[in-house]
Every structure is written in C-alpha cells, then in structure tokens.
Length: 112
Length: 115
Image (cartoon, rainbow over the protein chains, first blue to last red):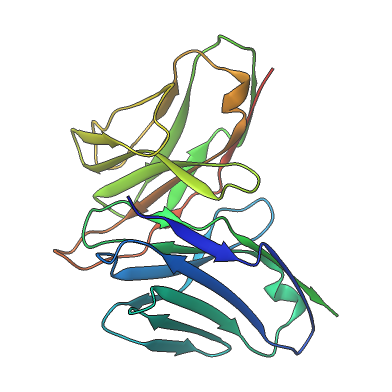
C-alpha cells in the first residue's frame, strides 16, 4: 500500500518568513495530493490540492509543487502570519475511490 | 449547509462498553470514511464506504463495525471498548465524479476516552 512520509514534524518561523513542508510517497499510481490544515479542536480543512498532470499550483500565499519522478511534493507558505499556526497534513491518493493515505502532520508555529 | 456533522463531540466510556459514533452529511456525497487521529501518527483509516450498502476495511478496522444504509449516514460502532481505542475520531465525505479526485470534507471530530 501507499506510504506517505512528512517532514518536519514541528516548524517554527518568524512572522513574515516562509515555511516549507515536504512529503514523499511510495505508490507511483497516486495521482492526487491534497494538503489539509487542522486548527485546534477542529477537523482538517483542505487548503490546496494538486493533480499529477500539474507540477505547481498557487493560491495567494500558498503554493504546492510536485515532482512525480522523485515522488516528492511540498507545501510553501510565504509571508507567514500568526493565523497560519496549525497542524498541516499532506496526503496521497490513487484515482477514484481509492484510499487516501495521510502523512503524520507538521505543527507550524508562527512567532509574532 | 451543515457539511459533515459528528455526534457526540466528547464521550467517556468504561472498558467493555459499546457505543455508536454518528456521522451525517448533507452534500449527497457517495464516499464516506472514518479515521482515528493519535499523537504522532496522523490520520489512520478505519473503514470507508463508496455508497449505500457498500463498506470496506481501512488500515485499522479491528474492534470497529460500520454500516451504510443511506447516503447521508455512516455510523461507527465500537463493539467492546478498549483503552487502546482512546482517540479522536473523524468522519469525512467526498463526491465522486468518474475517475476524478474530489477533496474530502471532515467533521469536527469525536473525542473518545476509554477508562
């Protein structure tokens, strides 16, 4: 089955700096890679996703890159703000109804 | 539009007791799933369903049962609670459009403690 590894497990940055979270996956059949943000006491919420036919996707301060050859994908947050503090999860999924496999999460702390 | 609703939000059980965690969605999603979240282990899939009457096991199914009699509801049953089942449980749903992937929508979780 799919195995998703996520690094780092914790990340502290100064407000205004950039944050990068990296994930690797094992199953070459995976073609959908969502990222979720989980705030304290809440369920994960999708913040951005990328499909395997695209190498990069950007939404305001958030961007995701995908390297299918190396089986790597990364989340980039620029100009971080205190409200970006949360736990972030990457995930990988083959097509259709296949199971989603999650990484173990990164706790991001943005220091004002 | 309520999205995915989980009840209860908190529950304390004694070892050996049984209970049902409720999950309902109002988005007419075909795909529903249950995860447990434990510190340092991310989200692990317990059971999932691709439509009414169809369920399948995930990564950690032992000790849990599910059924899917309607599109809207996907309850998770703990048959005989054990301390190892202390966790936060999340229900999620997503649409399905052919081979395209759609994002999952999560509820806010049920925090379960087994004494």
